Length: 241
Image 1 (cartoon, one colour):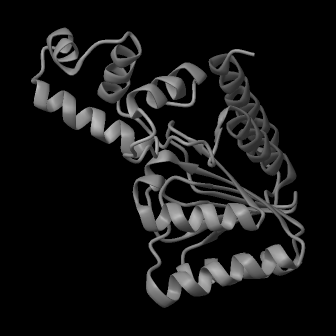
Image 2 (image 1 turned 180 degrees about the vertical axis):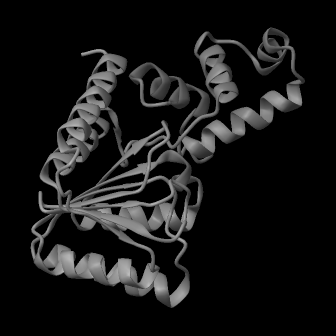
């Protein structure tokens, strides 16, 4: 199904549900206090068997706070909770955040990555969902939603996003448009000088883009492997995005 059509249908369904709910008490609670939000999320975590999550940016937690948060996730995974998380590709640009994501993924909190903008979302089972009051990273407060029609739409949004997202274990993070252009020309067999002329940039700039591609594709320099060939193979497999 065409993405634009499916998202338009989803938006139309949301309008329908809002129309149906006019005049009917809706189970949506506005939580202004961030500590209250954390308490409600902790309560939902203790009783839920499944969590769907979307994160547009990495966690602001650092040091001991981050370690405590990671242990908490590992604990609920060991207790049997099924977790799936969608993150924006920019999160993987931070090596520390990327390492944490891969650790949690290996432990059972399955992650996928998207390049398109997403909003913060937590859905526990089909019982309660949390979204930010203001769709800005790290903004305080959240809406706690128990209205089943709205939860169903949020789950549909998650599942559609999950279906088109890529695995976090793919060997590529995120290439810039220019890096993709350079890689496409490498795949045509062109030298750095030829690529520079084709893109009207300096050969030094091409060298920097090529080096960045190698880093993002996790292709270390070795005597046995030709990194340009390996990068082209990743490009042809569709793994380089």
